[in-house]
Image (tube, rainbow, N blue to C red; front, side, top):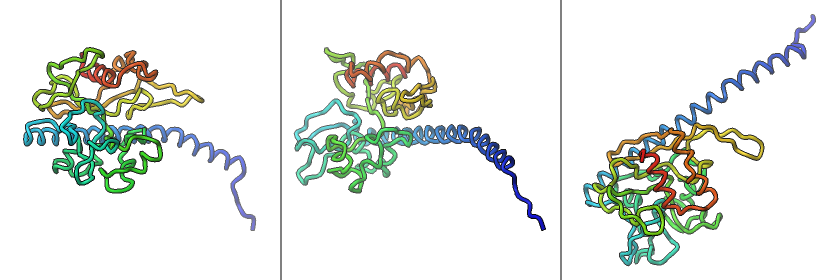
Length: 269
């Protein structure tokens, strides 16, 4: 009895059809995955917003960054624990919680993973980077030792609260200090966004690989948290065309001036 089998041409046709179907389906699956990350990210920011309001109602102030000597730090809004200087370690040898870490240690935020967007591209701002050794919030961290960073625990968002009437720095285009009370926050500007580390590292975007260069499409977006606890997704291409992004990439702008400029752009100012 003669056995029937596929011919080589039939197999090639089947393979070609499968390849065609994959080329059609995979971009759609990636888009769905990207949208899912953006939605989860916005949800986490919204949860932080609710916790911030509750914390501020209980303590009448925003969670600040004060060392053991009572000195207030106005920069590095992404740092929530610091182990690089003795003034950031308490008498028991434990890192002092600062900013959003106070939400966690005060019980207003039970899961620190909420402080991170699942779309973050840089290890420096990923939850998993600060769980070695476990638990989160402990120092020293293996990740910091491995990549030569300061012994800090960082959040996965950019926290930069701006006052209604900010007192501006005399040297750069940025406020001289953070507002102390929640009610002092600017109503039209966000006080936290996705990680702002240049356009290439934005959490929500589509990139087309072109050899050694990345040619980004206009599909950039940034989730932003406002004082009334709502989160909006900024997709305005004009925001991402501003020269401050290029100045940041070439290290020609102070971090605070960069954040302040981008936050103003997102807020339409």
